[in-house]
Amino acid sequence: MITKTNLASKPFRNRTLPYVISLLLLALAVAGTAWAFTKWREAANQNEIAVANIKKMEDELKDLSSKNDAVQQQLPADKRELLIAAHKLVASKSFGWSRLFSDLEGVLPGSVSASRIAVENVYKDGDRIKAQLEFAVLSRDYPAVMAMIDNMNSSGIFRAELRSQDLQQTDTITYTEYTLSLLYTPSVGYSPQIAQNGGNE
Image (cartoon, rainbow, N blue to C red):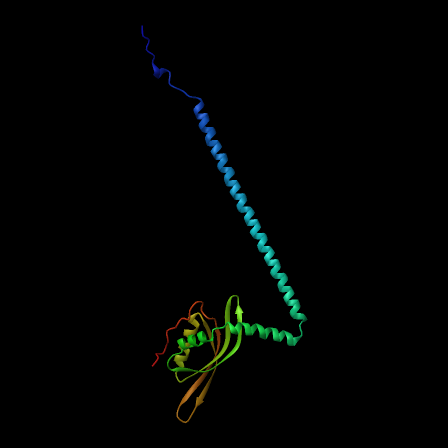
């Protein structure tokens, strides 16, 4: 006689499998946490090293600056002036005079002409060379001179300020000489030509 077993009344149960899966998930979570903590510690250590290096460099810069100040204070007045002149000479040799003239030509309207230029100072500001100039122009067209100054100040390479204006008169013509204070910072890479105002004729 064959006995039929109702399998539905005795469902298959594996009590071990859920625990194994839970243990595997827990192990993965622990491993992931350990890996993340290791990476965090590495990043923290690198950050500490970088901060220490920056602090060391700042201390070295302060020390060098203090030594430089001490040396300059010990120098006689004439030696200090010679040192300043030497720094200016080094800066001026790395200054692009042809670029300056090109940039000035780019902002001069047709009704304005340059009359003189004097260099008051050349110096380094960070890695950029700058020059303080006294620049004079001749013109009978006041609006064109003002437009030229606006062009200079919007160019990004000149900062212009009108110092004075002097009326000049001859037997045939009357014109004005305008003296400007210029701070010139050459552009990096190339010398842009600014749109000329007043129309070159």
